[in-house]
Amino acid sequence: MTPAQKPIAVTMGEPSGIGGEITLRSWRRRNDLSVPFVAIDNPDRLRNIARDLGFSVPIERVDDPKYAAELFPEALPVCSIDLPCAPRPGVLDKSNANAAIASIDKAADLATTNSVSAIVTNPIHKHNLYGAGFTYPGHTEYLAHLSGANSEPVMMLACDGLRTVPITTHLSLREAISELSIERILSQSRITARALERDFGVSTPRLVVAGLNPHAGEDGAMGGEEARFITPAIDILRQDGLQISGPLPPDTMFSATARPTYDVAICMYHDQALIPIKTLDFSGGVNVTLGLPFVRTSPDHGTALDIAGKGVADETSMVAALRMAANIARVRGVAAQ
Image: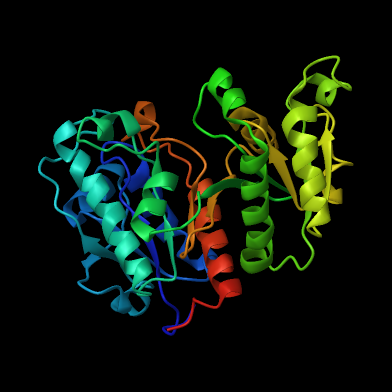
């Protein structure tokens, strides 16, 4: 870690969740990180969490993230966000919802102005934000709005040995099926292939596509979506020059022998993409947003209100998200000052 490296911005997330704890725990593991980070948070909140959990973590308020690298070895640098009320662990407070949104806004502004090398977002409680007028399904869509991205952002889940992309995300299964289309599969697969080259340094990405139905439809015997949407999209992408195969039966494509044969699995709905990641590495999975002008990752878990304040939160996924953000920024060439 050198002073020439731009820090990563870490957002507050839900103030009553485990975000503060895993941020503090990640700083305590700073020797495991290659790039410093700056918390976009409330300094008093973090001090209180550290005190209550018995953590020795000095907190230093900074007005500019450029000071973060110098401070990081000895203290956690924090760009301050105002909180109307002192959060209680595990207890949602709508009056603090706008602070969580403000933290995302500040991080996106810092990334857009090239003041930080990447963003890592702590988990938000969407229902609590909706009460404050938040109208986006989640971080992914909101960050796309803030960045002015011209295309729909793509959610990738990643752990050691596997990357997956769900074509549809936070929809009921019935809605997800109705949203499938050739155009949607084409768009998200193309964004994914470009991101593998730009963000992960994969020169010739290998994509595999999951079927929707059992046995990938078995030639129409178990459903027609493969013939109507999935196979035509694969044929077009193959004509475009992509190395792509499918539709494959989802019950066999994630086996230990299958995974090394591809760089990403394109899945049809949320759980089809997340179950294999969480099964392989429940604590270490990372959520990556593809198609943004800046780097964004996040731990692959929620606010965990039930364990907030109890000192048992696991920072493994946050540390993995910080490492992946640093690696992507390095590959993109945006890590240096």
